Length: 437
Image 1 (cartoon, rainbow, N blue to C red):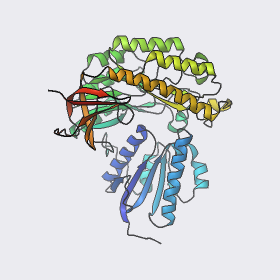
Image 2 (image 1 turned 30 degrees about the vertical axis):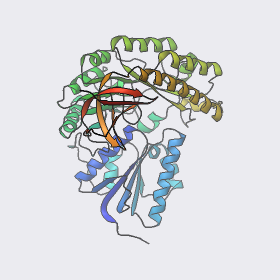
Image 3 (image 1 turned 135 degrees about the vertical axis):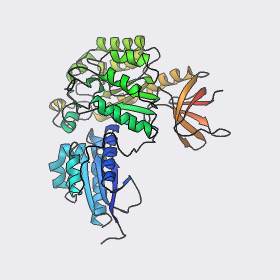
Image 4 (image 1 turned 180 degrees about the horizontal axis):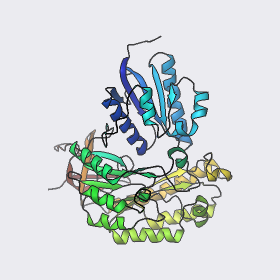
């Protein structure tokens, strides 16, 4: 029995997982709005008649969160608090038959490339003319831009190709059009994302075109920063570094997931590189783009990882001195090549190794940050929180990296504005400062 009046044309969209999922939800919401639906994002009002959950299926914890969220809204449907429940995204792509069997109180399950079908289920049309038009869930001054979909890499541990399919680059003209549209609506920072951004262009242009894309995007009026994420180390197109060095509005920032450094781990992971080549690549980054900030992610406890492999990772982190670093514990994913291996590192050892890496990285981050005291940086301000205006330098991406905090007392900074900040003190993962000049 319904407990309250629901707005029949109102849709509440819930997103789980990564920034790539976030873009998919934004595109979905743009399409729904163009079809005269009222759209809200992760609303707590509970007056929407339709809930769409965009799920993540990456690793165990993410899968469990997605399942729990589906069950939560399935109960609400049983209670009459929503009329229709639709599930889409990576978990649905990967486990649709199982989900249909186990959670039947869902009206429809869709995969990662089923947007037209999803819209049709709601009586809506997919509008091809909406290039780059979407409802941003981020503050309007920054936006993620997905430059390609899917992945052709053979990494043994990764289920992404199972959920996202083969690599498909978006045409350069379409991306430039989207950037112009975003800039006209107040976006100042573009965060380029993909499963593998360095593969961009190989499928449609028969050549790696990431550098050209970045150059063309840097020419879009109003875009102050362009930030590159998820660069694959094997076959990295080094002309990207030339563009990064030459263009002032391309951030000296590189997010390059390396996963491990031990040769036997890299070989088993099918990463297509070696310890020696990895060190050489990092050296070239720093030679070609002095002052570049490097972010990486690593995996602890991959099958067969020995204490010696773990020690090699610690030496690597200590020597490479990444500006930013995250680490996952290995998740044994069905239908991946690594699933055939024995998941032989106990969970507590995986966690201990990950914690050891992060403890080392915290010390490195503290040391790197301490050197910034007295320096001035251009900062893009994201929000006001408590007694501080909170922003980021060009070396920091939203959600995952350092933030710059400026006391709000006797100061006013508008969200989305750039300002020069002099750093006065630092912590492991934060900078404190004051407006310069």
